Length: 177
Image (cartoon, rainbow, N blue to C red; front, side):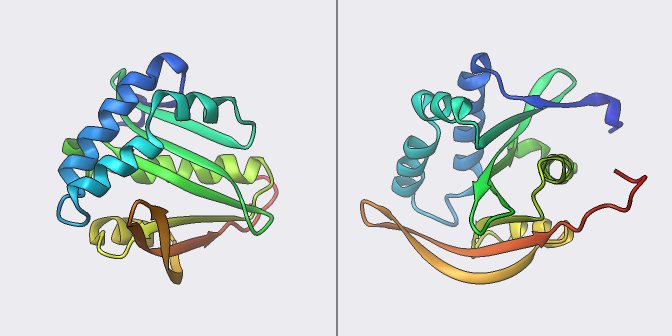
């Protein structure tokens, strides 16, 4: 796949229905061996409603990007200002299930790193389910390390049993930015 096939740009409101459909399809193909169907439905409702995404698109501290492959929505990411200061949290990063393993997630991560540096962030962090072996491997391959293990109560009797992974973003030498 050549990089000319790929375009990364900010998500538009018109993209929301396609993004919701991609998220739903991806979650139901990937997560049933990791979390229950009830938790998948609950988390999709929490994170991927039209109203939630529209509100986040209007928030100056939250960014959504879409990755187009040959003009079609193939992946997306959402990232936001976080604590401690200087930290950007990668909250969502998904590619169409049938395109996994083609480097789209890594391409989005490099894009997010560039955006983070341009905005003055020095660290990325993310959370990943402890049983999501493929994602953990992909994040490690992209320079993330496990910083802590944590359980987050997300309501309705559900928890996220995650690793918090981080990647330091040293400033690029002058002339390489």
